[in-house]
Image (cartoon, rainbow, N blue to C red; front, side, top):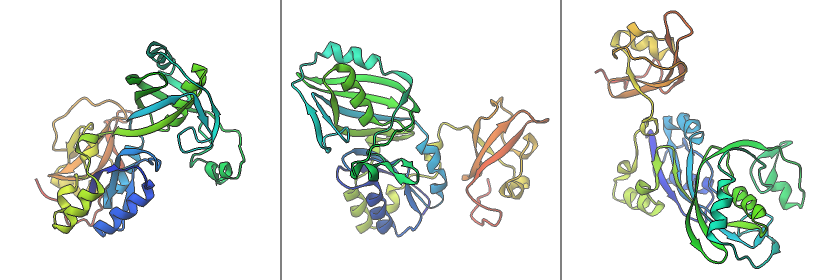
Length: 310
């Protein structure tokens, strides 16, 4: 079973616990997720199975969209509602002020990760140190907020914001930093991931739906094809005569492809197919003469028997 399940993670379990449940349901040993959601967060958690696990890094690196509730007037050690309260005050923040603050956090910036995170420092996860009351200096990381909008406002101290951001962005920390700038302090009081790359909330399935599909023998209907998250990449097709050459990971040239010549950009990623079967991901290299297509990731091998002819 190779492909993806666009899972709607509920509040409560860890991402690893969700993966274990999917592993038991599918009977597939190779199961993983493409970007952790905290236990207190819900939303899109793409699950990859079989050969799709090779593509997990591509989805992890893709942009994410979140909806977060921010509550002003409280600060905690975890930067969310589950932590120890460090400071409280009565906040009365206007809608216009929140909109002004959001403008300050758009674009490329440096963000210091929270202590309660799985980032390792000296081989130890930061949250393990935090639980012992140890705080260490953390290096700021480059992130980018592509879009940051006020979606709803609940006076005097709560708002819902929508964030489109790069990999590695901590929404808890974003809410914390907005709170600092407001003068009141703030926490992230809820979080929902609306999308991760091509995976969207509107076609996500729940664990209950997966269990029902399993009992009805229809689990395969919950699966998305292995090339589902690669829609943004152009397709190229290898000729039958060059198929084994491609499966051995060799460079390909225009004469190896059954696709009409197209002007690709240097470094552009492309999907390589034989018939309906995705073989792997190549990148276009125009530094060579003639230009070539270099393998980045092979999803099958030279002994594969399931490759379908056009």
